Image (cartoon, rainbow, N blue to C red; front, side, top):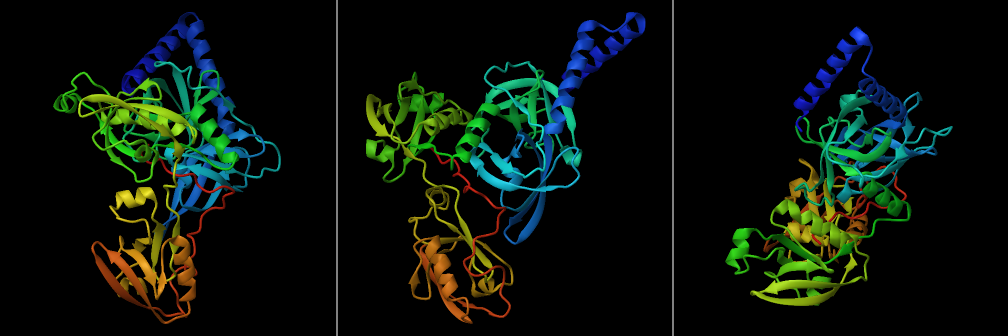
Length: 465
């Protein structure tokens, strides 16, 4: 239901309650509902924190604000990945406590937009009560609590508009709860609670007036558990795919078929070893039918693959050139997708060439270091280096990966001139970098870009299953 009808209904009910109260006392049901909302708001607000981060993107530092909530009295906090992504510094403000606490990033997971923070309070903190999202029903009343536009402790009231929403956002694995309770800038990471005061979701993003999306709390609890145990582990099949709509099914001669169409198969992946080919139509996976008539339906299949443990054997039923067949695959651990990065010290950054980066950039090989940023006016810029170049050598040293890049950059740190050999499309470029060793750009050569400290590395993004 759109926000305006809900708001109008709420105002009408409140007006009606006020009229009745003036005549013969408040309606008991309406008064009980109002008191319940007030009680839940007062119960939850002390658990909701204000998160401030300083994020470094390329050569700029940008302040980012958001919300979070306390999940344990000793200072464990849940928030969104996008609130603290690329953060050099994170601080947390707790209601009723004057000093802002420095926060440590315990771990992050981009594909569910979740992050776990830790602060060190002097005394125990009020922790939120965690519920379950599975029991939520469309039409159920909920409260969203956060800090929109820096306004601490803001409460909005609405309903669950839908469940299981798949957003067409790259690298997201989630089935969002949709709500018309307001989620504005700065509310990200705050809790969505039911009228029992239990957190049922983590607010992730708003999309226009009265349309907000929330991560189910059950997903968040599982990701937090895995982060605390060392990192998120997900299954991987190694295909990209598209939905099988009716027109495509008709063209392939299988108008009654449902499933997904395989677009590509990664080399040496479980799918390749099982014999899957581009053009295959996957109709069932691990004994369950696969249905995806629209692109947004693909998320359900991606999540199904990601939930499987590496080593799990699956049967894949498919159609190939109109004929039914099946193959057996062994699910592998999802390869690292979110690339590590390094700064050069002479005005450019590079990133690791992961499977996902190689696919997105259409690179024929994963060898080298991909230039992701070049600072204007820097020695690298004057040498002619461009974003998208793949560094293959520094002086005479081969650069197969990011570790070799860091080592080689350290060896040329004191040289006034050194040669970079880079691949640019089909061409090889020889670029002479002239540096003033007394006035270097940025951190020491080959340094990893600074981030807020983490006890666990960020888990990988979600590749195609």
